[in-house]
Amino acid sequence: MFTGIIQAVGSLRAVERRGASAWLSVACPFAKLELGESVAVDGVCLTVVRVVDGGFTADASVETLARTTLGERAVGAKVNLERALALGDRMGGHIVAGHVDGVGELVRRERVESAERVVFRAPRELLRYLAPKGSVAIDGVSLTVNDVAGDAFEVMLVPFTQGATTLSERRAGDRVNLEADVIARYVARALTWERGAPDPAAVVTDDARWRALLDGFAKGQ
Image (cartoon, rainbow, N blue to C red; front, side, top):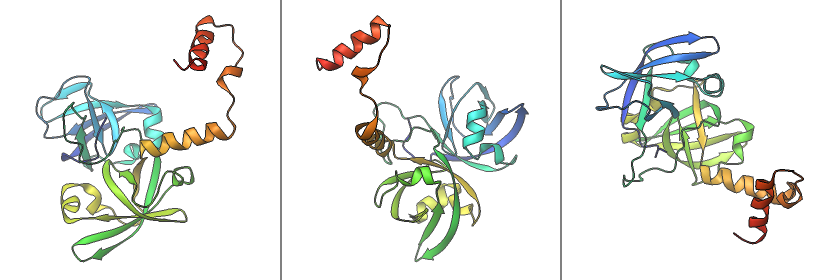
């Protein structure tokens, strides 16, 4: 789990294709990285498989490359980095899983005093999760949605965010990783279930353990 508060900006040292998957080498300033720990790279949760001087390596699966921009990033590209949340850490952003829902596109940006108003286009399937004053993670950065109109939504980048993340370098036409608020995702799933998903108690199965589980639901256990 992450918060969307970027801790450092690193870069891609190497991208080695292995069929439809890839091996990524990431340069970062984090000290005492451990094998198996999670690091969000441009909002994508990756597992550290090897710790090297000044960085780490990770495997990017077929699914990761298909649903994110990591497969498009060139060697040397800057990336936003965040280590997984530790119990007791400050929750400065919002709950971010590091599971990218889709790729969006930057439409336009404009200066508003010291801040910037930035508009992104989102895939249709993500739009129902976006609401004014709700949260969204863009390349791993926790941001507040200002407005939603049609297939686009708007956020504001304050000076600190501009200086501490890669979003200040994104231009019209650039693609970004988007992760919807996990709470919005579960609410949508619950509403979908209520509107027409089958009743779990009506499921026919010969699995005694599954039947016991359904009995527990019926009894409120």
